[in-house]
Length: 299
Image (cartoon, rainbow, N blue to C red; front, top):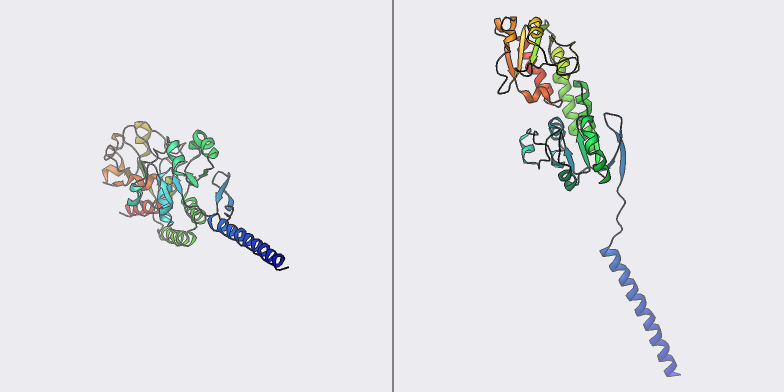
């Protein structure tokens, strides 16, 4: 009887030991291999009306346009940038971000290696070449295509929502709108924007700068010329006879084209230069351009 009791006790202990070992094993598994939550995604529409699938938190971003790089920094998300173009030179911090080629011919392999959550591009022209490759890698492409001051402000708010910096973005846009409203109306002056000297390029009806000139209190003398940045003959340019001539300040564009030698602008010394970056990038510094052009027209 004592032997039977002893056997029964040993059998019970063995079962208890097995339970303890099994529980310990489960605990170890749950500690070393916790259940990973499924990532949360959202669907947003870009400026072309495309549906883009993005993670709830976007932490790694590539920008393929200087205007977008500036905008991302402006809304307080510059720390998310892991890749930018060789033209992205503002703010200063952008110069230290890894370069992925230029705007028109980005290095796809380098972009893929950076494993961004999203790649921001400024125009649809870049899409066809690398959209499929990035899609196969699970990398989203979001197109922003600002064509006016209002659209610039809307896109800054959109960036804030996408990148989770809504409050800084809202403060930024409120400030920009106040600065735009502060530009007083004045007697309109005929303005020619000289983008380059030889060949002579200017702005046309499809350029956002045509609106900027108007809001600054001027009237672009080429506002009805088709396209965004048309090339003009000297005869056509001379006939515009602008009162104010504004040069995009680059090494080869520091002097008025010979077509304007008899214009009111040159005769009256109303020739001004402006930073080419702030008039070519539809981002937050476009308001700087607006203020500067308004200042030229007040002189």
